[in-house]
Image 1 (cartoon, rainbow over the protein chains, first blue to last red):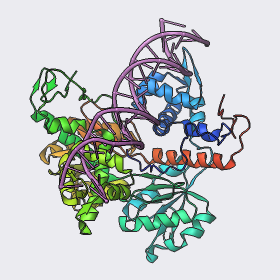
Image 2: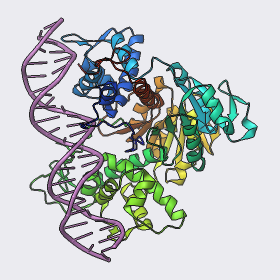
Image 3: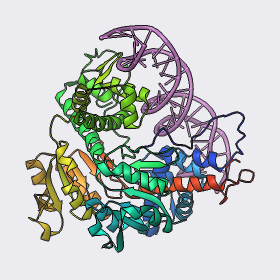
Length: 256
Length: 256
DNA sequence: TACTGTGAAAGAATTCACAGCC
DNA sequence: GGCTGTGAATTCTTTCACAGTA
C-alpha cells in the first residue's frame, strides 16, 4: 500500500488521555474504523453496486467476501465497524448495505475534485468517467502552461495554476489530485493546502511534506512496480532453491 | 494500499521450523522482509537516488526518515531487514544503501512490462518515462482494437490482444499491467496468467481472481477517492463537533 | 559523541471460533 | 441449519529504549 499516511495524521486516536474529557463522540467512532477497513469498504461497495445491477437483493458474508477477494471473517468484522445490518441465517440486504457504506464513506455529498497537471496522466484523469459517476465531479483543472489555459479537457477549461487559490475556493474543491512532474509537486501541494484543500491524491513520485491536518494518499507506479519486482525476484530464488519435502533451503515453507 | 494481496500466498514464513538448519541466506532474508517494509524500501530508494544526484554521500537514519516521511526507528528496522550496512556514529553510505536496496528489490535485472489496454491510461503508461528509466522497459502493448494494431505508442507498436501469449513469451514479459475497461479485465488477466505472467498491476476497478502463485497489486482510483472522501467527511463531522449523547449528525451511533 | 542495530513492549489488524438469532 | 456479530487468540507492524560501536 501504499498510502502516504504520515504519522502525522493530526487526528489520532488517543486511547485514554486523562483530563481531556472527550464527549465520547463521532470523532472517536468515525476514527474507530481502522484505515485498512475503510479501504476495503470501498471495495465492498463496488462489488455490491455490481450486485444491485444484477438484481441480487441479498448476499451472505461468504459470497461477498469471495467477490471482494477477502476472507469472510474479515468482511464481517469490517461491516461490524459500521453497524449491524445483517440478518442471522440470511445475510445482508444488498441495497441497505450500499446505503450504509456510502454514508460512512461520505459519498452522500459530492466532492469536487481539482486535477493539477494536464499532461498525459492529467488528461487521462480528466476524461476518466469513473470520477463523476461515483460522486466526484471534476470541478477544476490546472496547468502551468499558459497555452493550455482555456482549452477544454474532458469538458472543463483548464485554468492557469496561478489562479489555483481563487478557483479552488470558488468551486469548493475538497480533493486535489496532483499529476505534475515530480519537481513541481511540492509547490503545487503547498498551493493546494493554502487554498484550503485538505485531502490530496498524489501521483507524482515524491514524498509530500504537509501539515498534520492534511490527508495525503499516494499512487506511485514506480513503487508498485518495484514491489512486484521484489516478488518476481523472490519467485526466481524459490525456483532456484532446492525444496525438500515442502521445506526450502532455509526453513522457508513452500507448500504446507 | 491498498494492495490486492491474496490470502493465499503459498509461501509462508514459519518462525522456527526445527530441523532445517538455515544457512542464513538471501531467500530466508528475502521472505523475512515484511510486505509493509518492502513498499517503504522502494520509497527510500527513490529518496536516496535523489541524494546521489545531489552529491550527498552519507546520511543518517533521522535525515533519511524525514525525507521519506517515516519515523527513524521504523526506517532503521526496515533497513535492518536487509542487513547492517550503516556505520554507528556516522550513518549510511548513500551509494552502498542504494545498491543493497536495488539488489533486494530485484532491480538488478530488467523486468519487461506489458501494458494491456491502450486507452487514455494505457497511453499515459506507455509514455511514462519513469518505467524504463527505473529498470522496467515496456516490452509490449496490447489492445483489442484491430485499428490500433501496429500503431506505435511511446515507440512500441501495439499488438493485438489475441497474440498476447506468444508475444509475452517471446519478449519475456514478467509484469503485466492491466489498463482495460473493467469488463475486460478478468479475461485479460486470465490470458496474462496463462501466458506465464505471475505479477500483475491492475488499474481496472475490479477484483481479479487469480491462482495463488500470481501476485496482484491494484491501483484503484475510485477506492483512493473514497478513502479521501471518508476523511473529508470525518473532518466535517469533527468541525461540526456537536454530538448529542453519543448520536452523531446523521444518526451514526457513536457510543452505545 | 553520535549514531546504528535490535530485543522487547505496545499497538493494529487479522483470524478463529462460537454464542446468538432467524 | 445457516449465517451474523464479536470476544479472544494470533499474527503482523510499529515504536521504544538502550546496548554497542566507530
